[in-house]
Length: 213
Image 1 (cartoon, one colour):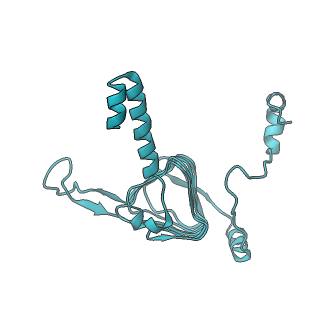
Image 2 (cartoon, rainbow, N blue to C red):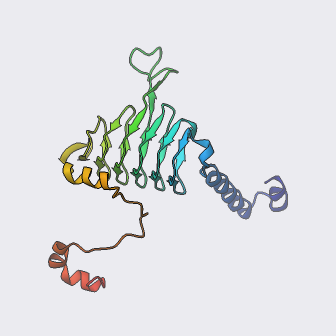
Image 3 (spheres, one colour):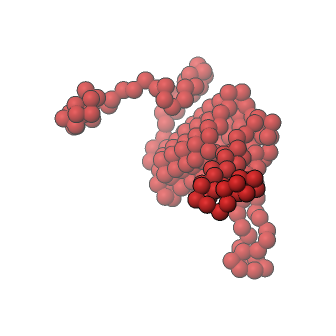
């Protein structure tokens, strides 16, 4: 950059070049190799623009997928079970400031480590925020935009801020699929697209204009 500045001076072109170079460095810092992690399972995948501050404190089991925009502060340790998907723009924190009885305000220099444990076959929707110390049970679904402030039981479907249980998966169906090895291995963009009949009836005119009918 010194050479570029010498050639361009403090011009608009130099500022653009500086911004592009800074963006390049930032993008490079968000490219991870399996060797950086405590464990990186077979078929695990991290999409571009994911930020993980301490990958050496992260265990990703087989076929875990983390989508773009997700921020993971893994100081306190993160365990993600197999066949789990973490959607776009999620936030996971595994530590927090010490403020109760702290030696200063609003907090002191102690970082309280609270590992986050995400079990197998969990589906985490876009924009979910998971607070430090949470455990997400096997097969749970965290609805888009949910804020997880307490442990989520196995097979629970939660949504909201703070997230509340709205229903549970069909237990017999879930464990039959698990025993038969029927789990999703296809990334978004390769799904079979099916329009729900209810929307066909309700929005026929609009769907025809969209070319979907």
